[in-house]
Image 1 (cartoon, rainbow, N blue to C red):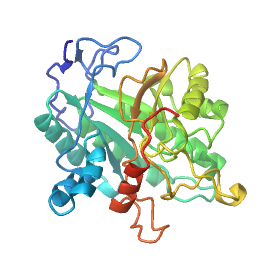
Image 2 (cartoon, rainbow, N blue to C red; image 1 turned 30 degrees about the vertical axis):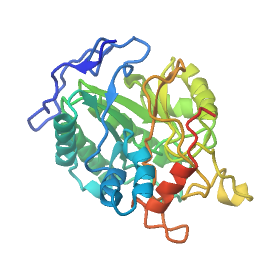
Image 3 (spheres, rainbow, N blue to C red; image 1 turned 180 degrees about the vertical axis):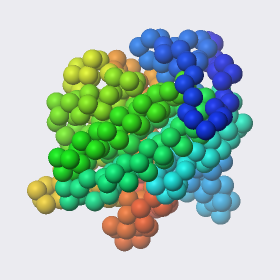
Length: 344
C-alpha cells in the first residue's frame, strides 16, 4: 500500500496582506496519492503533538512514578489533537499559529495539523451583540491568524459554538455574528492548503433546518462543510443523522463529528427546562468516543476528530475541577476508564 505523503508547500505567506495563492480545490492538502473527490482528507496523516500536548507532557512526568496512570493518559496523548486559538492569544495570534505549524512540520513532516478557533461565542447570553469596535478587532484577529497559517497545510474548525449560541444574540446581534463568520470565511478561504469547516452546533441544541439556514447565510458554500458536537457529548450516531439532514439542505456539504468525550453519550439533567438538554461542564461518567480518523465509513462524514481536548476542564463546576481550559488529570483518567470507541 502506498503511504500518503505531502508535496512541498509548507512555507508561510510573507507580507502585510493575506495573499491569495491558488491551490487544487479537489486536493487542497496536496496529498500523494490524490484522495477521492468524496473526501479530500482521506489518506492524510494527522499531526500528533507528542511534545507539547497536556497529556503527552504528563505521561513523560509520570512514566516512572505513576506508570499505570501514565499508560492510561497515553491513550489520549497518542491521538491527534486540535490546537485551539482564541482571545487568550491576544489581538495578533499569527506568530503563535505560525510557530506551531512550523514546529509540526519539523517534528512530523508529511502530517497535517488540525486547528480550531473559539473567539466569537462566550461574550454573554443576554440578547447581546458585538459592537463595531469588536467586529473590527475580530477582523484584525482573523487576518493575523490567516497570515500565520499562510501556505501551511491544515484543517480548520472555525469558531466553535458560533452557530450553536445564536439564541443568546439579539436580532441585530445575529446579523453581526453572521457578518463576522462570512468575514472569517472570506479571509481564510484565500489560503491554498487550508480545509475549513464551520460550526454546525449539535443535534440537541438546534434543529437541522435552522442550522442549515444559518450555515448558508454564513457562506458555508465557500468551505468544505461543517463540524458538530464540539462542546457537547451527544452520541456519534445521532450527530451523523443530524449532519446528514443538514447536508441535504446545504447542497451536500460534508461534516466532521467531535468524538472526544461522547463514548458514553450525554448526561441528561433531571430538569431540562432549567439546566438544558445535557450537562456540559465536566459531566460525570463520560468516556472517550470513537478514535480520530479520516476514514469513517460514512458517506458524508469526512472525519471523526477530538476537537475538544479530552481532560480539558470546562470550569470549576465539580469538586477539584480547575478553571476553564486547564488540563485536569482526574477528568482525563475518568474519560479513559469509560472509553467506548464504537460508533453508538
